[in-house]
Image (cartoon, rainbow, N blue to C red; front, side, top):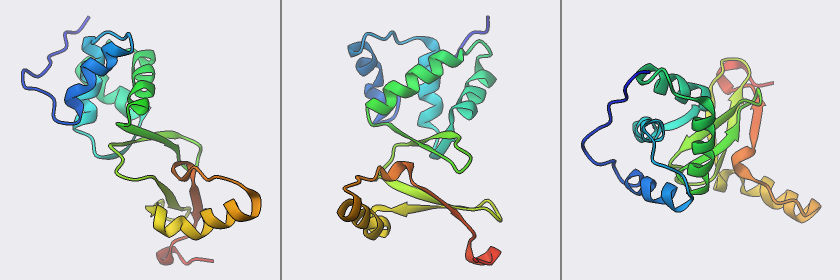
Length: 152
């Protein structure tokens, strides 16, 4: 079994309180959980669980997928991550989301852009007024073609 080398320096905020929060939920602070948190602390934007597992396994090949997935669920409950689904239905995580947002995905070039709450406000308001439907913006993915690929 490979040995995991963890940093001797403290984790950066807001990750520095994760150990205590995991303990509060009855979870141990294992080397694999610490490694995942360290990888996430160096990650910006969107990442899939498979990418996180690969990054962790590059450091510790014994990283177990179930530990990664369970820990991701808890970190989402703590507000450090937000999961969403890409156009292919692939689950991905947004690390340290500042605000809830959806995504535009170009079927031509594969480009991705975020849709902020202000940009989606009219659609969200229409669905709420017409259908009584509350939109979870983080799960909104609009697939189409960008200007560069020739919308239409």
